[in-house]
Amino acid sequence: MTATARPEEGYTPTCRLRPLRSVDFDRVLQLERALFGAGAWTYGMLADELGALGRWYVVAEPAGPDAVAVYGPGPKPVVGYAGLWFDGDVAQVMTIGVDPAYQRHGVGRALLDALVERARQLKAGAVLLEVRVDNDAALSLYAKAGFERIGLRRRYYQPEDKDAFTMRLDLSSPAAPGGPAGGAS
Ligand SMILES: CC(C)(COP(=O)(O)OP(=O)(O)OC[C@H]1O[C@@H](n2cnc3c(N)ncnc32)[C@H](O)[C@@H]1OP(=O)(O)O)[C@@H](O)C(=O)NCCC(=O)NCCS
Image 1 (cartoon, rainbow, N blue to C red):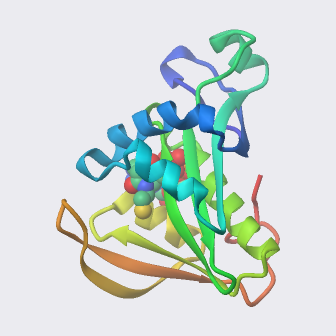
Image 2: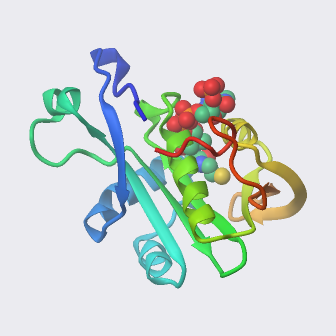
């Protein structure tokens, strides 16, 4: 997966995915506040979430020569994150977010594909998620990945008091090569 980082700087680093570690907490919480405002997870919520059963979280970070040119040889900033919960039957997308400076360059799709691939490995029958009814970017991302709307949850998001669509991706059939959810990086 490639992602153009900070296009205004003219760099096109590759992003790689790796497991979320506790050292990433501050950066992920910074992104949470920027992306979700009043609905952002707190440190305690994130720690509880990661410690709960059946969770699998990944982050995206710039990699390759261009990333070294931008950030130097040391650790690179996390530019996206996503998490999955598998209950032994179906998988649930818990969160997904991408640094605004890195959005619209494939990072979100790569993270989502990684969650779906993980769900397939776990033999989940489906992947479920909730998404705000007015979140056009996420709705389009999920639809392109093959998710279908199956319901509406009124006032699901608090304190924003917004409704959510429930969406589902059926995993009972094999992934089509190059098709929806078939291109995890
Ligand atoms: C939703 C989100 C994760 C997408 O991340 P991203 O890295 O920008 O997504 P990608 O570049 O991989 O885009 C994949 C597809 O998503 C859709 N999409 C992404 N951003 C979009 C936007 N601003 N408007 C419309 N569609 C958009 C498009 O269909 C896009 O495909 P395309 O590039 O071929 O048009 C990102 O916008 C985000 O972090 N939003 C805030 C947090 C959030 O709402 N998370 C979802 C909670 S349910």
